[in-house]
Image (cartoon, rainbow, N blue to C red; front, side, top):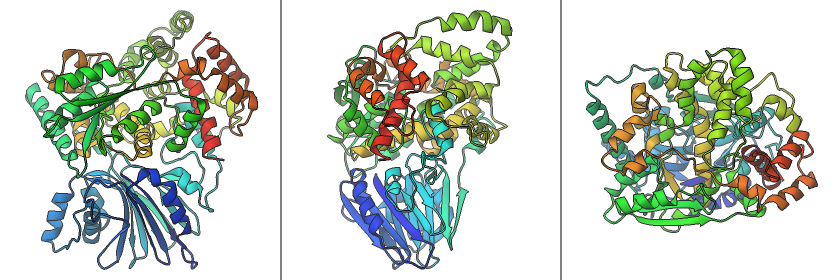
Length: 626
């Protein structure tokens, strides 16, 4: 992977390239193998390179067609060899062996339609010096980031928010809607960023900037597959065989590299399945990597070691110790936007561990969103019958009983899940699914940050818009579609990208190959969630290939014991932080915050999720917004 940056001027005053030069230095962690820039009177491109394909001649920015087209590109195109062969048959000439040049040749041949032909993970900018136009494009599922800002003077784009914030035309003003997103969900919903003047290019979209106009278009959307007729094979075995062949093909395709490839291994079925397929494509034992914690219930090292022993991988593991506040603050800088997901901590450390041995790692991310792996999909199924019980029984008996259950600090907290389910099971199915993922209520948000409602906006309106895009889908596919559009792109993939790039590691996600995603959406619901059994088809396909205890173990999130750390090793530092009242965003004297911290720090209750969300925002403000 790489870091990209660029700007185009809409005015007569030429681009100097000074900001791009400085931005490249800020992106050095994303591309430790080299730096390049290109500048003419209207555009400036910058690039930091992590060499994966064509190590000798793949430097960027790269030109094509005698300098008419220039590109700065972050990602990998898995089908570039097939595209190159087709383009060569049309007379295209190539100077390198890189996938970057194939993108340029494809654009020169097919224009914006070329984006649909790309199978990979990508974010790029292409400058057409004849048309004086800029094209930005982002991959189908949003694996790679692309952010931009524009006004009447021009447009700026980059891989990271902090790079754009360094531009003189970009304001540090916070977006009120984004702040509501973050405090409600723990992440900011696309196309917003936490900054009012910076936007994310949505997955499956491209942007064209020309003659002072900026237009954004969609080139791919999963909606058509979410609503398409289900596959209709005659036998279950036919479903299993087709899924097996497709997943094996995708993993094999993503093993192509000129540098060493390994895999993350948590001991769960998603990563273990990827390790199984990848192991068959390496002449030597596949290198695998896992992270654990010393706190009981937070380490999956035992399961990861079982998979390594079973599949004979070359396994590496690391135990993360409690971190001081200063180290957490450093991590927040890499994460670019505030993120309320504690799994950013182990994701960073497993990336750092992997980078000591390989340059590319395969991940099992995306399997839960494809095949209904989260408990929320089971909750969706239970919500309809539960909502039929009499309201008085819910309010007078069930709700008080559940509220009386003390919350624990355990990683897999059934009491927390039950409490969330009961609190939000009444209402529409769409609202229930949203609220099971939500954190602070609008009233609580106002008390914490003094934020008033903006045009009656709530994050659920974004969810509702995605639900409206798939009116013909099954309830399960609607939930999967919405989670892919929100949770996956703005939390999971953002977290993995920032963590891996902090260490100069490329992470590939086989489950998020567009052709596999399209196929999974068309599977009948019973092959994803059968009764209360999630990932039914994957478990059947891997039944004779992985240990039974791995396939059927309870799902455990990739979280850090931050709730325990805050109550123990971090307690003094957080006390000092809250007393200093140093935040301009969070009201550190808010009665709600004071109450939560008092109860949590003394062990009276557990508010780890909520407190980490606020702490991450405060640390981000100090590190990035300073």
